[in-house]
Every structure is written in C-alpha cells, then in structure tokens.
Image: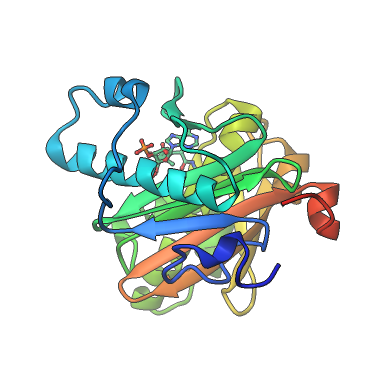
Length: 236
Ligand SMILES: CC(C)(COP(=O)(O)OP(=O)(O)OC[C@H]1O[C@@H](n2cnc3c(N)ncnc32)[C@H](O)[C@@H]1OP(=O)(O)O)[C@@H](O)C(=O)NCCC(=O)NCCS
C-alpha cells in the first residue's frame, strides 16, 4: 500500500511501526466536534480529569483510524476487561502516554490480532526488571545497567502490546512471565515465545512485533497476519 493509503493519515512518528494494512492516528489534541459517544461517556463516568482526557483522546484517535479505513464514526465501547470494542470486522488497539494518544486499526480480513503500546520513558525502573523479564531475558540484557534498563523497557512495552493483541483471542490474563520476547539483533522487531498455559504457543508463534524509539518515547506493535494479510490480497 502506498503512502496515500490508511497509514498516511495522522501517523505522526509511527511510520513503519505497523504493516501496510494498518491505519494509525496519533494526537495530543482533540479537534472540534470530537466528543465521546453516550456509551463511552457512561463508561468514563467518575474518571479523574487526566484519565478522562486520555480516554477522550484515545477514542478520537480510534475514530480517525477507522475513518482512514473507510468507516463512519462509531462508538468504541469499553469491554469487561477495559478492552476497546471495535466494530465487527475490525481489530485495533489504543495506547496513551505523556499526553499523546495513539490508536491503530485494521480489517480482520488482514490481521487476526493487533496490539499497540507507547511508553513515555527511556528506561524501565530497575526494580521492575525481575517482574517484567523472565530469567533468560534478564540474562540477555546488556551488562551496562543503563543499557539494560533501556532494553528492559522495550521488553515491557512489547509485552503490553502482546497482551492487548491477544486478549480478544484468549480472554485470559497473561502475566509478564508467561511470554518471552526475542528481540531482533537490530532491536527493530521481535518475536514471541509462550511459557506455560496462559498464552497459547501457536498464537505466540504467529505474532510479529516491531519497535520504534522516538525522542523520550518507545512504541511497540504486535500483530498476527491472516493468510490474506500475508499475501496482501484482501480488500482495504
Ligand atoms: C491493559 C494494560 C496492558 C494497559 O496498558 P497501560 O500501560 O496501563 O496503558 P496504555 O495507555 O498503554 O493502554 C491503555 C489502553 O489499553 C486498552 N486495553 C485495556 N485493557 C485491555 C485489554 N484487556 N485488551 C486489549 N486492550 C486493552 C484500552 O484501550 C486502554 O485505553 P482506554 O482505557 O483509554 O481505552 C495494562 O494495564 C495491564 O493490565 N498489563 C498487565 C498484563 C500484561 O501486560 N501482560 C504482559 C504479558 S503478555
């Protein structure tokens, strides 16, 4: 798909994070007329102002991404475990951090799963490394403590993207120790290996992941392509 396709709209710095079938929108501000739908507003009742602001921005980005796919404005309701409920035939994901919200969506004819995470940080708190990383992941971290904390943040973000991608398929909590992230040599992508029963091995093996390092921010995406997505032959 060329740059006039869904990826062209509102991508900000996320060029190349997703496969071509994905429409992505990122924003720090709401445009005029970007309101919550009634069921979204009901789900957000009682949110503190900062949480409400990020929720509204995430929903606005979701609708911008859907519009890039040719869909009209619709509610993206909140599921039982906080997951966004996309229209039929769509997979997608939302993340927010540091005042930025990003949403990505694709047709389920192209992708069977899609997860996105952004983190407004450059390193993981070293005190969290043992929680986030499996022992073999910790052993693979760089010896230098600063570099290790930076790489651990990539693993953390990748696992959050994996969780968001897989939740609609497995509807089961997946812990940080249930999956291992295998980073590419250039740290531009990753694969996933399941450990234990919470994450089905076949789904983990089907996942592909990419990483983008932005100024003071890390973005990760994880997805599973359908057969049509692999050949790029489905409708857009
Ligand atoms: C759900 C979770 C991943 C959200 O991440 P976060 O860093 O808190 O926040 P982000 O801004 O990146 O993402 C929040 C968005 O994720 C989406 N989300 C929340 N729960 C979700 C779920 N179960 N499935 C898919 N997406 C979900 C929502 O769209 C939410 O934004 P919204 O409430 O405004 O709609 C995180 O809170 C969590 O529970 N993690 C533990 C599980 C995990 O990561 N395991 C890793 C091993 S695979």
